[in-house]
Image (cartoon, rainbow, N blue to C red; front, side, top):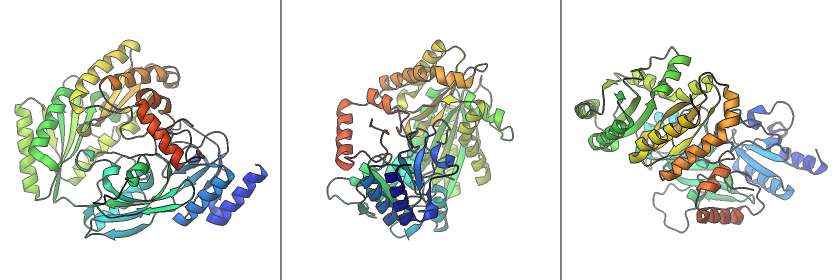
Length: 476
C-alpha cells in the first residue's frame, strides 16, 4: 500500500472510526457478488454511520482520486456493487445506516436511511397499520438504498409500480462530497428538473443515496391468493386480461412459472408441495393475488367470479385458492424458491428482460426454438412477473452437461440470441436487475446512441472525475 493510500486510510479511520474501516482479513462479504461470479480486491471497506460521514469519506476519496463502489446488502445480480481487481477502489458499505427517521401516517410516508433492510421497513409499516408494497425474494437482506439505486421491481409492480414509483424524495451525497437534501414528502413539486429520478436507477454512478422518503398505503382489508394451471402462455395472458377487468386495482400480483422451473423446486426442495406438477397437461402455472379494501367476502366473491369466467373461457384448467395467509405464504414461497432451486441445479445463464405483455407468448415460442436448435438439450427456466411484462428467462445446461463449461463456452452465444430477440420484440435487456458490469457491452449494442450520449453527458456533468462506481452502466 502506497504512502498516499495509507494517508487516505488514516483519514477514513478518523471519519468513521478505526473499527469501521477494514483493510485486512477476509473481506469476501464485500468483495464477492451474491452469485459468486465476480470477486474483486478493495483498497478498504468503509462503513459510515451518518450522512455527514459519507460526505466526508467521498470528499477524502475525491481528493485522493480513489473511486467508490457503494454497497447495500450486496444482493445484486449484475456485478454492480463488486470492486474491481485493482485494489484501488473503496467499498462504501451503508449497512450501519439503518434508521427510520420519520413515520408520517397522515401523509402516508416514511423516511429511512439507505441501509435499512427492506423487510425491516415492511415490518415498520405493518406495525403502524400500513403497507410498504415493495416485495422481492431478497427482502430479508437487500437494502432500500440498493433497491432505489437499481430501481428494483418485485412481485407487486402490477399494482404499485417499481421502487421509483414508491419514492417521493431522496438525500444524496454528490461525487464532490456535497449533500443534496431532497427528502420531500410532497406528491406534487413542479420546480424544475426531477433530480430524484435521475439518481434512482443510476446504480451508484452519479452519487450516493443516503436516505429516502417513501410512499405508504393503507393495508388491504383482505388478501386472497390463487394458483392456477394454464394450458399455454396465450391463455396466461388472457387470464391476466380477465383479472384486470374483474379485480381492477385489486390485482396486486400476477406471476407465471414454467413447468421446468417448478420441477426444479420439487427436485431440490421436496418438502414443498408444488401444485399441478405435470409438464404434459400443465405447461405453465400462474400465481395471482387479489387485495381488497372492503372485506374478505367481497374479495372472495370477485375472485370466484374471475376464476369461473376463466374456466369457462378455457384460460384455466385447474386452480386452488389459499384458505388462509399460511397457505398463501406457502404458495408464494414456492414461487420465490425458483432462483434458489436453479442455483442448486448448477450455474446458469440469467436474463432479466421485459417484453410487451401481448407479445410474450410469441417471444417465448420463437426464442425457445432458436436456443434448442443452437444447443440441443438446453433447458429453459422461464418464470417471472407476467403482470408487468418482466420475465426471468434463464438458460440451464443440458441435463448431462458440465454447468461450468456451459456457462464459460455458451454464455456469449446465448446472450446474443436472447438479447437480439428481445430487441426484435421491442423489449428491454434489463427489466429490474440493472446493468452493472455484466450487461455493459450489451447496453451499448441495444440502447439508442442518442440515449447513450445523453447518459454520458449526465455522468460527465455530475461525476467529472469518474469516481462513482466506474465501469458500471457506462464504459469508463
